[in-house]
Image (cartoon, rainbow, N blue to C red):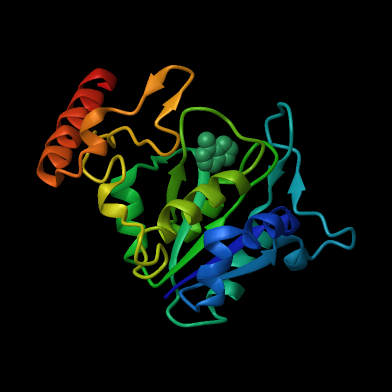
Length: 222
Ligand code: ADE
């Protein structure tokens, strides 16, 4: 069981994602819990504001320290253990399969999603989160990056993929290693044939072919 607490200004963005496919089944099976919290509910402002203009000038708005820190502390206190706090930010540690494995071993993750131009730096100073980036590009907020963290992490929770799927064969399960090509019916599509070795039922030959293809792909992409 892994528990995610998502702290966001846009909890509704998660509704579709949570109600589909693997994640839906994992939640129903009690393997994963996802709790959504609206940071705005911790605003002390009568207009429920959670952002303000940056000191020193410049474009955009900055998430204020007080409502964000209050929200994190209140959500932490709602369950045991306190959990590991992840702050979604393009300046964070790059999410790769190594980090995903590390996160999947945690019982509870709090995912803090920002909007606007960023977070007041004192949020980082007070909460010392693990700052996580999904890549060197800027999303409109931390919500899509948080979904990427949930999506990649739950695959590694025992039982989530069921008997059939195994994350051990996935691309990147070893650093830089990419998965071999897969085929299904029909045998010929637009004059492209499925490799003969896969049709022969010789499992040793198939395994050898897959290792070879996997090595070739990994080599080509590096
Ligand atoms: N917020 C905006 N862009 C992001 C990124 N690339 N990774 C994580 N959080 C973000």
